[in-house]
Length: 307
Image (cartoon, one colour):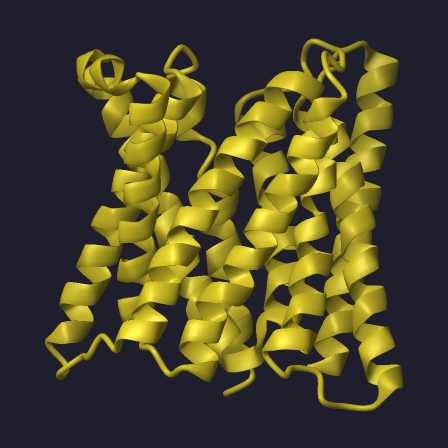
């Protein structure tokens, strides 16, 4: 029963993460940087609510070092998100999100090097790493399933996508170092990183001269952005609790895999992203999706054997 709790946290986390892109579909004309800022304030709102609920259960302290590290992790996440936005605009969503799956490898290696995870036999480590690679392969197939043919406008987008993976992977290691090594409470860390993300988002808006634009956009767009942030925030808190229990090296690849499946199901089932393709192409895309899902589940099973 105890071992089932982290896996349940991971699945619900992936459900929220995979749904975070849904509100964006309803405000496509909202500038990416502006939407990012509204989303970050949704993340902050979610963190404040979680912190308020837990605070009633007892005193919670904010030691400087881990709190500062979580704050910095939030800033790192925002810049990773900006790199991702830039990558998508240059090389398309399919290529960008395929490269983004490198987060699993970066987090896996970082957890071993900096968090002291996987202190087991070398064979077990290689088994877990094989599971990570299987999940990445499945995610790549799923991502390519729902993406339309997109031209690569600039090869620098490939660099941006890689940098985004590096930032997101670093974010995972930094925030879990503050929790698992330095002992910061999960909810205190979530609040600190949300404040760091808000700080980073404001700095980016100021630097890009988008503050006035952001204040003048439709309230509905802000609401949608905040909704996306609430979804991401819920996924983040649940994943932090999961990573606290079973580690980054196991939790992150599984979250990435299941999240990709959820996101693709939204695209196929709700937004009908395959309706504009030919019948032959549609069948091929569905076969890719099913194959990718089977691979992802197989990779999750392999990693679960290690856990």
